[in-house]
Length: 472
Image (cartoon, rainbow, N blue to C red; front, side, top):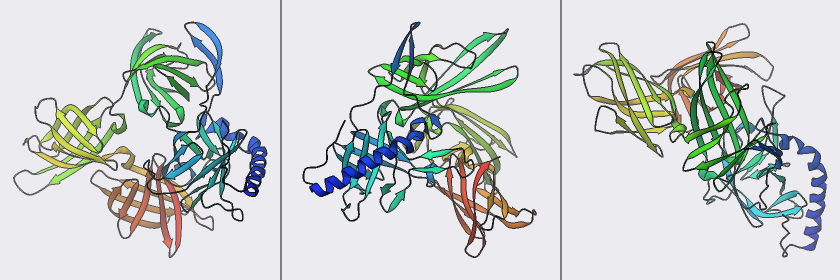
């Protein structure tokens, strides 16, 4: 596809942009080679060998003929926990903080030369050009020069702070096939060496036409994981997977069910299996809570665990120090941030919320009463002990340890390389979206993500040490 410049643009400006495009094209052929092979640590596949019904043919991935559509841009690994959106319509583009694009974060027109494209922002001038160059590969946009988002200038790549072997790239991931996004789960048993092995696996279809596959199984008393990743295509009910460095796998996707060849372990042969959409996968996990009441008719001190599974089932277990163990099982549904719990032994439903890694809902807390108490259960991503090393500007080394408790309290300790305590604080924590405030002697704002907890600790006036705390 080739998008021409608007005719209304001056010939001088056209010549200027054309020169830039050809210059960028020559540079892009070398500087963008890495994004074509690695996107967020995943290897892409541009083609391979197609295997279906024991017949083998050579096939490559079809590329869409148009840039038109929407893309999400996640810059978490580039230093800011933020996802925003890009929309392309014809030769116009729009950037927005959400998919309404009501708040203008940048817009303009698109020019192209061969396989190289350029955003020309609406506030770009001949004397002060404002452009972003990119390529279009595997349905995704790979930026090779800085992207301008509002007042921010986003660099096209960043080396990992901890591992210099890892480089993250700025990519606009297509939202093609979004009606199929989600986790599809399945399981089966197999016998090998007189041992029955239970395989449990999930296939996740994501933006950017990327997929991940994880199979977990136990053999010989040891638990193993087998993983695959790559790209996928959907044409009607036909699902094609392109695992990295493997043959293309063709299956079907119909009514929230996938039937496709599954390879559950490195040694296993690939065979067709059915996987179902895990409707509650987004909130599945283990949550821990604590509630205490020392006055009134009902007194208790309860530590509890709430397990939400991927298919809408839950298990609640609470231990009251006074009365013993309370257990409850049932099903649940989720709509937005609202949860509805339906206990198996009751005709009555109970409602709650799931917000910012916290389930707030009424549960029984004592065997001495059927009364339900509403209290918080925290996701494991914000529970437990997190630690990391950090350095100040003079390269002095420190270790920070943060412990988050199910009663909503925290302990924070920071020591220097001589193990002398620099910080020792405790208090309560409050989570709002991806931000978590530690409210102790001072208020410390942290950022929570799948990678860990980002925190800056002040050790002297206007002197801070940064850490990416990870769970022990």
